Length: 86
Image 1 (cartoon, one colour):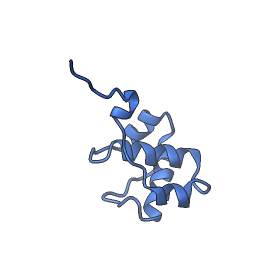
Image 2 (cartoon, one colour):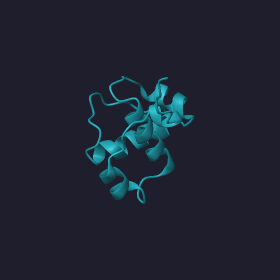
Image 3 (cartoon, rainbow, N blue to C red):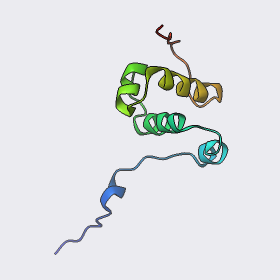
């Protein structure tokens, strides 16, 4: 007989830095927190603001604002400057 540990949803996890939570849980807005959690979950993948907004169900402008929030705080690096659509 063999045994294995069934930890259900804990089989697939990603880390959220404690400093991120400690410093930003009170300051960041809903969309900003959604974006950083999505980004942490999908680290290493490329994305566009349109893809991010579609994945999260938020507007492209809100996605851009959230990305700028995290970039301004040094947690994301800008590799390309996205323009807002008028």
